[in-house]
Length: 232
Image (cartoon, rainbow, N blue to C red; front, side, top):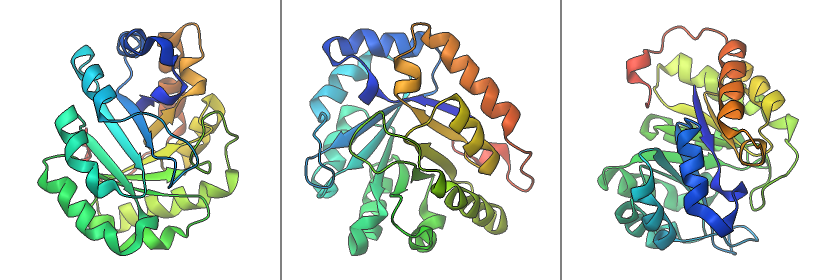
């Protein structure tokens, strides 16, 4: 069960300290939302910021590209120190070559799906993925309310994973707090991207542990998937 604090909710005036804080809190991955102002109506940060943060922690950098033209960003983010790169299924015909390019760069491959998009759109790509990111808010801004209608998508993704014996992780992002983390864990998620619910806590280490304990207790046993095969 992976807890991934989302840097979008951190204090941008002291990012280095916030990364150190997430590291001390024993977060597993650092989730980095990259927004271009086109694919989503917001702008965050680019490869140079990621490169500056890379020496500060050994946490995995989980880079989520909410961008209209991710093809021009894959190599810069790989060089900056990304460990995982996730693109969106909404990019249509460009998805397959983008996934292959990410793999060729030696990185873990992720695919995201937005709330209005049918989960069936990811089906052709499942055997190419290390990570399936199910957005639980409409992307672009932090602090939004969790969309409960997305829960069946998580359940379907988990059912496919078990039926096909595939090793991809299921990540949830958007409105994830202690309550919704447990709810999505019961549905089959195993990566929990949380921004406001973690970074806005005075005791971040305590908050990470609390979320880890809650999702561990909530998630039912999943048979047929080897723990060694799942992305660590």
